[in-house]
Length: 65
Image 1 (tube, rainbow, N blue to C red):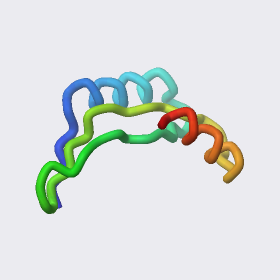
Image 2 (image 1 turned 60 degrees about the vertical axis):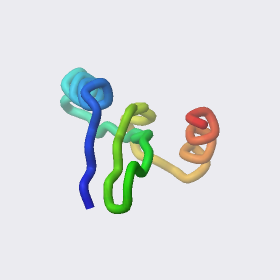
Image 3 (image 1 turned 90 degrees about the vertical axis):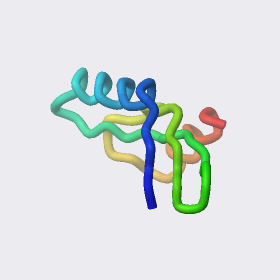
Image 4 (image 1 turned 180 degrees about the vertical axis):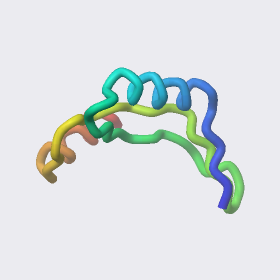
């Protein structure tokens, strides 16, 4: 399987983890399946920096839609 990360998504990921170097960075990658065994990530959405629980994740994912 091959995964391609667009520049915008890569920059968002790297800038966010560089800003929060001492914390975990938990987020969602948004993308599409271009062909069989090929995924293209077009955006990254940061969500949390602390321990994650299921109710928090459910609410956050509803906002991401």
